[in-house]
Length: 121
Length: 300
Image (cartoon, rainbow over all chains, first blue to last red):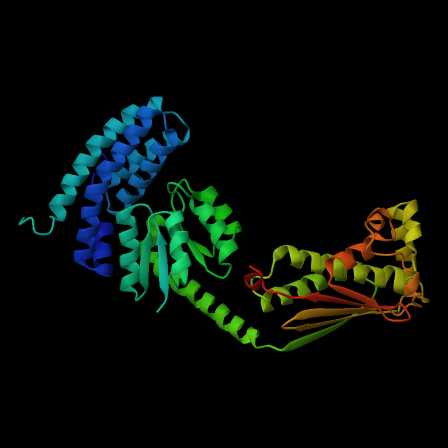
């Protein structure tokens, strides 16, 4: 089985053509800031037995990941969202662990493609 | 320039939407949830709302319901994602104007916003013209065909609804019921001279007699006429039949609730309850019903 695609730059390149590179960098920065927060919110929801909170966080992460082309995160967050929607918090732990790794890979790929403004890279 | 309110709890998604709108020449402001959106709507002039559906504290569906009640002419576009399809259907039923799938925002958002803003503007301009409309009068002549009543009543209700945008839905329904009862009375009792007493034997003999008389040359060519005259203050409906009429002074008090239980008094009771003014001509074959039309916004 082939490894899932971590990052596809096409959605952001398309956005650059519509709203400009500076705005897209801003959007990427927002995702870098809020993506990990959502993963943490999903983990908290699972720990606290709050399926609705976990679902909301994963739904948001999934949608944002899709917008910025983080395909693997989008897919894994979707799996987690489905489990949370079913109230199956027990089974959510493993996907959340996988999602953590996927998010690290995605953020690294994003930094490589869109270095933060003023980072000098 | 149209001003758009974006309701989205995710900052990066809200930024994508605002950037797309800005690039297309729209002004936008962001609310992070439905509650904040409702607060902003109280103080800012907004032409259109673009909202996510799955959000903390207040769902997009709840927001659509509240906007529909408070600002009936403010259009709402939904941003839908996989998993929110069912809520989206409900929100569209509740009055949302359109939707854009989240994965197609870049391709479809601006076209959808532009067309919805255009429609809303056209509607507002039409409402502006209608605000200056002094009077409209429609006249209809019907044969004794009961199936014509519902569409005719619907037409009158639609006319009121278009002229008095935001007119109370319940009052509109009551107006329709009263008009329907008056038209049924004119057809069945006025033109066809079928007595309500026959109903005591059951609905079937009553309707069989109606069908017999509709084919009877003594009754079949009689017409029912409706004149609906609407001004900025009231709707006046006159329903006239070509039957022999009756002495209106013999009608039992139609405002007495005891008549609700009587087979023969129910229609009149509803008419007198739902309309503001009701009168008969001296020969009893024309009923005039008046409904005062106050806009909901003015009542609030």
